[in-house]
Length: 268
Length: 223
Image 1 (spheres, rainbow over the protein chains, first blue to last red):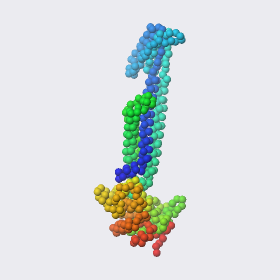
Image 2 (image 1 turned 45 degrees about the vertical axis):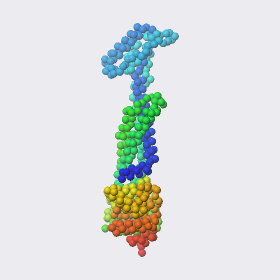
Image 3 (image 1 turned 60 degrees about the horizontal axis):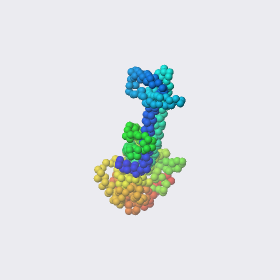
Image 4 (image 1 turned 180 degrees about the vertical axis):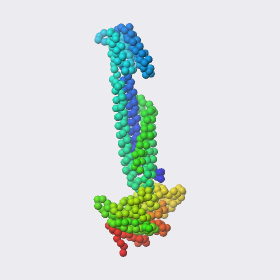
């Protein structure tokens, strides 16, 4: 019976399944890139929000060395009391060069990068102790305090995207059920149990969704590997098989598809 | 005890079309009943009420003394599995082959036969109706008469206890009509109950059966 039902299902609803497949493919495709951009954006924000750049301007090399020592002492002190600081380099001398400032040649400019935003106040205090130094502290464009809001905002956009997918899928599946309502009625008139009939339909649908998911992911893999789409369009390199892909597979197989089955089973 | 009893059954389709009006009748087990009357008399509606595709607006139908209103969904499934229904609109699965349509009827009736045995029985019937060469053809590619034959085979393949046939001979050639009538008589002689709706006078003449005549939804006593 199942064989005949599968055949009937595919013959009758071929174009419907084709539409559903394209829908799943485009959803998986866009969801993959949305996730990629999401993680890239967050990573970028974190990077930017943790960099404080300090520019020191002075003709006095000794003074610059003293400041450097003071800053290093501060960092060492922080390392001792803050176990987290040990895990990352919090103080880094980037470059030393000469610049012209107000038509006066300043022979020494030292740029320091501090990766701990919370040390900003302390560094400012240290630098204020020196009278003959001109310094600029360049704060990050995004405060780390705003980071959770940015993550949540982007997360909400992703969630809306996901809910939209669920709603559209539900409408599509409901349409499928309506399309085959007449057949279901005939099955019942011939003595077929509606539970078994719907179970067979659900199995067909589940099988189809599984195949579609894997096919979609395989296509994304091919597009990434062969055409380097993301790299050429946005100059971003994302590894194809990574957590994002895996999370999509798990999302489809263990959350979305069982959800469909649950909804459809309620109709049985 | 009668197999089917209708007590003052009325069926009204919205907005207000009285398809059946106050019908009372009974059908005994093993009877051959001819349901006759002109087109639009209410024959199909009466059959639909019996196999519960539709429910009456008023009145009650009894199956072996039990009112339909007291029967559960599963009870109806069990009854339908013992029925062989030939629908007026055939209700075939157009995208399945002739063989698959017939086999599905066996499966839905939960008749488990060995694959080979089922194949032999199906092909036997197909040969009787000159359809064996079209067994693997999709139903949608068949002519109207061929479809009607498939609908007939699908109904009787499950060896039903009750046969409900709604105009089963509309587009069929005289030879096949003869074959259908002979099978129905044969089944009736084996004790099966047959309820045949037709307006074809030739069939009415050829079958010796209890006749129920309907006209504009009313039961007309035959003189």
